[in-house]
Image 1: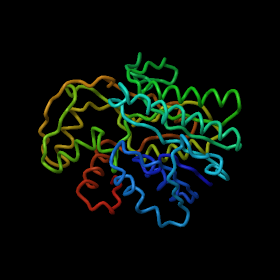
Image 2: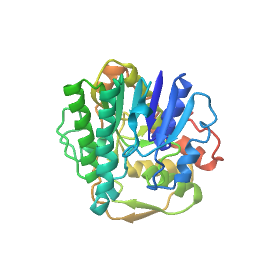
Image 3: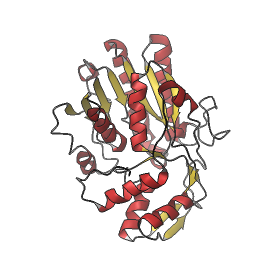
Image 4: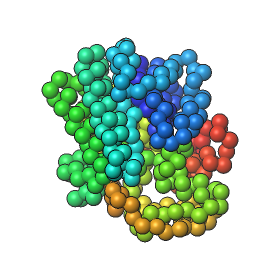
Length: 317
């Protein structure tokens, strides 16, 4: 299968490229290498892939680049590119979120329509739910995002559904719940937590620690993305980790895996949902999704990655 991965140099994108190549696919990775965080980290994410015969990297801004040549011959596009982060989406930076999350998605869908693409898998987010009405949250629950970031992810989802129903573009949106694992973005909670524990530094905690998430290991997510692409099913599905854990519990677990964590409490941040928990019944029925990595194993992999030379591959044991 010939695959295009947008956002290929990012945390999830680089893991997805590795998964696809391991499955025998031919992969073209596209990334603009924006400066949301250090582009050197993104280049490092791709270091093991650049010499492989079935992997091609293209540095391109999807907002301006001609897309038809990039998609030519592809069987599936995995669309992971975008502007991440809840906290940065307030204020003047919102323009970037509109451009990179909404306008780029619309351009890709137009290109998919022109080229007759067989499948587009869009990486959406549990942020579309905000403070959900029920838990575990099903896809039928009314989305109520509590951040501008969540608004743009939901808008991109609606675009995928509109192009699917009106023009027959075979788009699937996967709502990812708090993905973690080695190479996680440095601004994300688990990345900061593991780095603090391994370096014996204090860990700034936003909120009281009672906020909970359905943490999902990156290996489970990328396996599900490929399974969704191979399935004839289209629509919207949750990808959660199968269990809900509070930040206090996660901090205690990392303290046992690495070293005791000294927490520095801070205020809640605007746009952070208090709780997330996924009902994964749709994904299980549609393409056999069953998360296999428990939180302890996944965090242990992050600790090993933090302590090991960058070139070592860290997988859960």
